[in-house]
Amino acid sequence: MLFNIESDGGNIVSGYLIPDGFSETPHIRVSDDNGEIGVFACNDVRPQVTSSGRHETGMVGFRLDDSLIPNLAERQNLKIRDAKSDVLIYKRMTAATPIARKIIRLETQLLPMIRFDQHCGRHFQYELYSAERLGHETTLQVFHLNAVDSIYLSGRLLMRNYEEFLGKGFEGVVLLPDPYYEMAVRIFLLKRMAKAPVSFIGERDKLILGSAAEYFSNADLDDFGSLRSLLKKAPSKVSGVLTSPTTRQLTTTTPEQRISRRDIAPAIDLLSRFSIVGHHEAPDSFQHAIGEMLNIPVDDLVVPPQQMLLKGLADKLRLLPIAELMLEEDLIFDHYVRQAINSSRPQSWSNDAS
Image 1 (cartoon, rainbow, N blue to C red):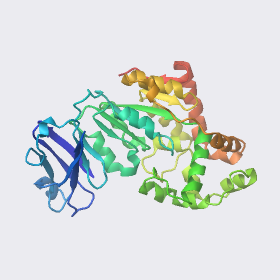
Image 2: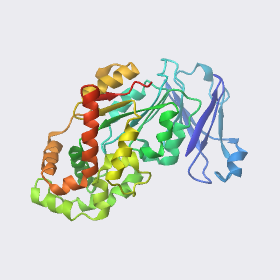
Image 3: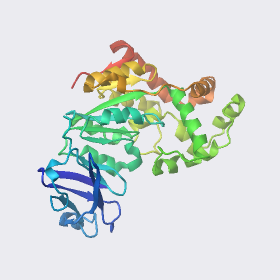
Image 4: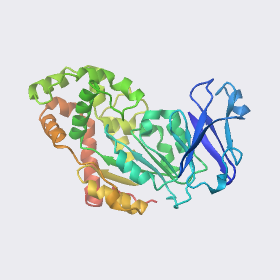
């Protein structure tokens, strides 16, 4: 899906929404502070979209005016969304001044920090969370929103595909997990996925994680010997889900791509271009760094604490050589990153390039 806002002249708002379906008629949902205003079909033809083979009819443009929405210029905090996916296309902020920065928060955990993102995102004109659920094309479109200077984007992305934007107006922030704790989270969620739907896991990830979820469906996570046996016997589709996920996020461009020790240095190099790097062992420092960067109240920026059940599972994993082998790149990466954090400021790493 591609989209953009082209102009907001108050009484006229224009843009486009190109759906994934070649013959699909896109619709936008418009709302403001008083609730939903209406759902409108895109009815403005864009010939270039047809000639490029992106859409059958080219009927992907929209133009809102007083004939469709009375008193359009006076509408407070107007929002335009894709009616099908509910993805935000445009937000007119009139009640507050948005933060004039473009932020990408790289999510490194399978369990996303939704509340944290919501508290940050409400201060920006454009906000999109868990972008990995929407695929590469839609995520890339957010980086290309040229008419918006206030963007907050988060997602468990393969960052190598978007690294060029760190030098083109976007500032990266990331909270790194403890490798063993993240492995515990993944195993726990995979076991849960096999029994019940997990709302924050997108369709693409369900396909990638499906084999691993089935493998751990009947796992006894309290049995040390059983856990060791499961990890030792894990087939490649299962072990790939658990193998050094942070290093993979920073160095690969496709989910199937393998990594080795040679990828640790490039991962650290890419991380050095981030404005704020924190570690889950010291979440308070990360919260204060973000609050200072965005000039917003720190108390609203709640990083979920580690859960005792998962900490216990992580402690079991620390005793397993097979878990250490699977996390080899992430453990080395984590060691050097924490050294850098501790040498620059207590438990936090903040680049002041901005």
